[in-house]
Amino acid sequence: MSSKFDKIIDYAVRKGFFWQSYEIYGGQAGFYDLGSLGVLLKSNIIELWREFFVKQHQEFVVEIETPIIAPAIVFKASGHEENFTDYAVECLQCHRTFRADHLVEERLGISAEGLKAEQIEEVIRKNDIRCPVCGGPLGNVYRFLLLFQTYIGPYSPSNLAYLRPEAAQGMFINFKRVYELMKRRLPFGIAQIGKVARNEISPRQGLIRLREFTIMEIEFFYDESNPTCDLLYENCSDEYINILRAEDRAKGIDKPLPISVSEAVDEKIILSPWLAYWMCIAKKFVNALGVPNNKTYFEEKLPSERAHYSKQTFDQIVIVERWGKLEVSGHAYRHTYDLERHIEFSRADLYAIRQLKAPKIIRRSVVKYDKNAVISFFGTKAPQVFKVLASLSSEALAKIVAESKGDGVVVEGIEIPKTIFRVEDVEEKVWVEKIIPHVAEPSFGAERLLYIVLEYAYSEDGGKVIMKFPKRVAPIKVGVTPLVDREPLEGIAHRLFKELKRHYYAMYLEGDSIGKKYAQADELGIPFVVTVDYESPSKGDVTIRDRDTKKQIRVPIDGVVKVIDAGLKGVDIFSLGYPIIERVEDKE
Image (tube, rainbow, N blue to C red; front, side, top):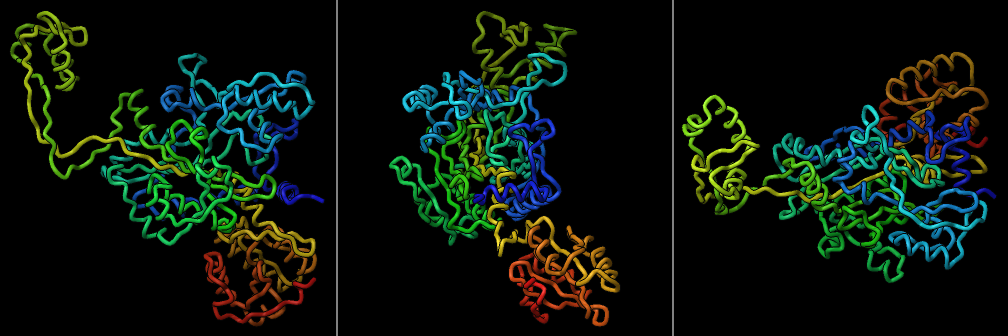
């Protein structure tokens, strides 16, 4: 008997949601093509994410777009060159390469995430774990860089670049530009949706582990001295999320417990209030994709499992039939790591400004110089000297003067008599100070969510497949069909179809009996089917069938769009006051 996973994959390929890339050449692991229905479903998931995370927060969250290729220095600064690795192991007999921790997990049913190479190797040797393909012995475990390497322009080590493994760095690099556009106000968020690439060692889980996929992320910047999140209490005070804490996991406890979002913040279970807020929104978003509360929870990563940039991370887990649990999003408290690193490597000003309640008294050394003495000493070269001096801050110039030995001060290769300079100690009242904002990050993979939607929509009734897609994400919103394929019913149906496709992705259902047409619509997950029947020519109305209840209402033709609009927005169409009817054809 086929598992639900096998049925979903068979259905998805057969109906054109997705299939393996380059299949005429034998396929390539880690790459999948989306067919027409897959593109529509993914697009709708992305738009729903944009609705929850950007549109509903548009006064302080903006979306940008940055390149998928970046110079190597970006990922050196971000720490990815050093840390974005997994452990690989090669079969000494067939020479296939596998991800070492996954082999341990598959063979022993224990998590190997966070273990070092030598620890994984010891587990492999102790338990005689062998190649899953040929049964041969495995070699040494080694680190493998997951960044895809390329070059910008002519091949040269100086032009080394990588395909981005996350969208985050483009947002950190653009922090100051967006900060200025947001009128220097914290908090604010930068969102980005786009392709990323990870050179996975041995992806073998279909859409779940891809080498190229679409990511949806927000980097949310806030002042850690004022981390209050009013929205947490306005929108999430009564919301409960299921959390499996790291300390419980370390004790062998694997049952998540419900807790209110505000309580999780007050008890420091979630360190960042804004991280908690986005986790709350993430739960609501996943609910809207068709996943009930009791099938999703947040699992806190152990310190050894966290990414190099994170002080706390929660994975959002959805229960699935094949693997038991599946991570669909990550929520990381990245604190100040990324901005600090980019400031260090680029020397750019990626600071925000904090207004002080009371001024600070700052004592500092400043340097002044005698312009007339510069002109007198350097003559025609004086403009060049002024240009060099103007490029330095007063503090930087004072430091150079103080550290200079002898009677001369060397600035940018120019020796200037020390007598030209005068260093003074001054006191200033300062009402602002520079800070590096803290960052909370929610991050989702669109293709994993596509699979989740398929699994939770899939159902069978009497051997027939019914895809109960949430109406907001259903690929095709409405079907149109005549009760029988003859005039004048066909003519009315075609005119109605032409009108409806101006508003939605629609399908004209033709051929076979009306029962089979409805079954075809159910199999594609179409929420509503509009039927032109024998009464339509004389009465000027049609029936609208609801996929999930199979009940119908009679609606005037000029009211169809209004009813479909309401239904797609979550309104119960049977509460709109139209006559409700039952159809014999549903029993075919």
